[in-house]
Image: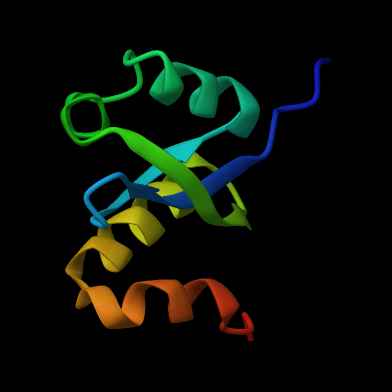
Length: 87
């Protein structure tokens, strides 16, 4: 039985200073996709500046829920979420 890859939620900064939040089970592959313009329409239009933060999640469902939660936060609180301790 093959072990399932871990899922991550990530946030990156675009060239215009905006943030993009997403999920992936291979961060390097996802960042390459964003770099060459195939990762998402938003990042393709705005341009990838840099990956800011990542956080490992329990599974894909947890990653999706985390992504949704982060997207509801105001911009000034999004990066802080990645530094919070999970209890």
